Image (cartoon, rainbow, N blue to C red; front, top):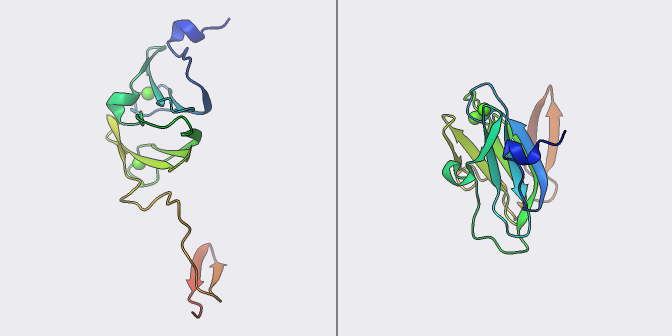
Length: 143
Ligand SMILES: [Ca+2]
Ligand SMILES: [Ca+2]
């Protein structure tokens, strides 16, 4: 039985990425959908089995995008260890990292965390990276 329409998730926007997670800590799974072709993202809060798009209120809508811009993939992790699941959106265009703010909204922390830069840092010639007992260390090379 297809419950897409009656659940509230039925959405005509084009997408390629989605992730289920409990964004507000109420014990049920909510759904983030990364959309394409300049469409805004969707964030469907689970209200007793019916879903309501709260992307704008929660700060992950990403409006005013060009037609070439879109979300390509999403992942969820508690990157700052505060017990709340945060959201990473890989985009065609600059990607975004959203910190979960007390299970009430997301805050775009892409810039302050230096996450997702489109430019690749240049490494000096001869620099080496080693992994010892799970720790990664990089020795400076020569210029
Ligand atoms: Ca929930
Ligand atoms: Ca967190």
